[in-house]
Image (cartoon, rainbow, N blue to C red):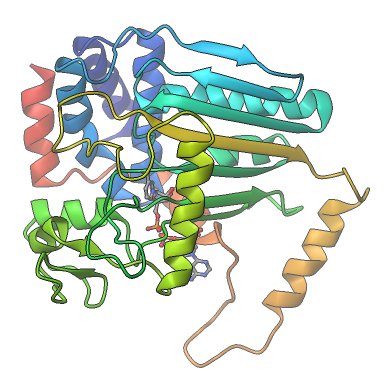
Length: 334
Ligand SMILES: NC(=O)c1ccc[n+]([C@@H]2O[C@H](COP(=O)([O-])OP(=O)(O)OC[C@H]3O[C@@H](n4cnc5c(N)ncnc54)[C@H](O)[C@@H]3O)[C@@H](O)[C@H]2O)c1
């Protein structure tokens, strides 16, 4: 489907489920971006879930979002259980404004929901020539190292900076072997998941997506990934006033109340310590890219390069709508 046609359709669906035009547009743009960068697990496959949560009022369609200014640099947002995209949008804009004024911006968000891709927000700050660090927690999916039960979310870690070229550096990675969205898409489409990414509920390795969802996902690098997930839970949950230690509700399965996810956005100027960040980072990337390559690798890429290429390529094409999403759209638009 052409973006020109898809965007008004998504806006219409979100408005039908109670969002204002502004909030519907912010949400539609975020979902389309996820499709364009190839993050299908965070795109249209989640539309029905957001609408179900709006209908059941566990996402507040008409939130009264409060922004408390703690200092010129620091703000605290109570998102009043709004759709996560709107909380993310307001938070990154506030963090950018704060950083432009003082050199550094720090924005904590509580009472939010699933906001999609961390990199989507980091990119907005990088476009303003800022460095960005973005954290969010998520519902239990990963067992802490040594534990038999999931507690951490796939808690992505995101760092973005300008590169002195048009493609930004955006490291945006889940701390699980693969992100949960990919497993959900595989489960809906009856596809297998790769080996070594999840265990079933009995602790046995599985490639069955449904069994993986009922079991535990494995963190990257054992205790190291578990430690990173824990760090994100502290930064985005404990610090912000959001839910933490496994209390974030699963958006697909638990409609007993809002998620109260927390996010943390840190943005800062590139010239705080050196005047020539752009040329320094350009040299840094050039040096790494010139290293001899192992067999089968044509180019050493920096994080974000692959997604940028996909975005450029996909923006020219129509968005592919899977059978499952087609059915969702048919039901939701009427
Ligand atoms: N909101 C949430 O609760 C939540 C939870 C988990 C993940 N997410 C989002 O899901 C998205 C996907 O996460 P993911 O872990 O599947 O990411 P991924 O595995 O696709 O990519 C991880 C990182 O590695 C980089 N990368 C990929 N291939 C590369 C290569 N060949 N060379 C160099 N760098 C390379 C990517 O640019 C990216 O920065 C992220 O945007 C994340 O924010 C959101």
